[in-house]
Length: 300
Image (cartoon, rainbow, N blue to C red; front, side, top):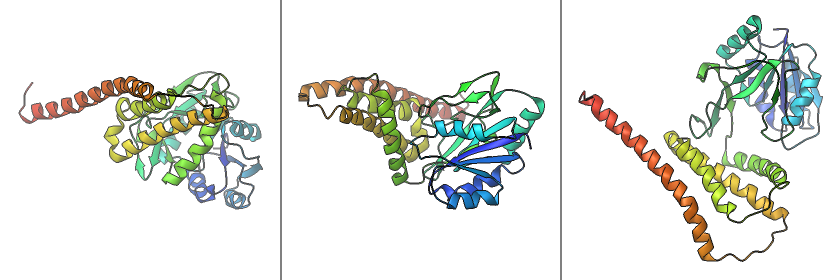
């Protein structure tokens, strides 16, 4: 569609994903704008095969300000699609977006993302439906220059159903090394932002990672995604730990004497939250067993 432009931002190494992303939007967009932060020619070579216009940008640690730059370079589209190079748009979603344009159903659209992590579609632990505003009328959405920030919107928005057919497919972390590399970059930015109005408190090294793990594994039912759910919940908890350690680092590793009794007390405080959500998970699982028993023997 000539009145739809795609904005894609890239860094070094993402040329291997780009062909799949570009092929998936054929027939949906009339213009492709790529903002490249790699400083290499590989991505430009791939982009030109698909008729994309490429703009260079200095490398930054997070994508939000670069998206705004890409939006400013779109010339043809009344509608804009924001896509990452490791994402693709399935045919069913493409057709739905065309309907929205043709029927003028909204000014912006929140689209679910199917996150494939370590080779598996992760449906729990707060990884689904992972709604993102990725399709909108030009001039109706702009990103705040805050990592993982919610964009500023104008007008009327709609959510697509949390169905696989309407989801952007996101080929997310492929390895532990990749996760840790990105985590190191993201946590540095998060620590810088948080340190502006936060004074380091050692107890947060226990409470914050624990709360993150609990929110994903128990409250977010990550246990239903098996080992993937457990691993990702632990990694996200570890990421929280690194953020607060980096804040401590920014304060020049200020010394503080902490007794073992204080640490045990902090652990016990967090343990009460863990106990609550453990019980919640057990009740849900046991309830499932009871319901199966009732169905088997046709009990009410």
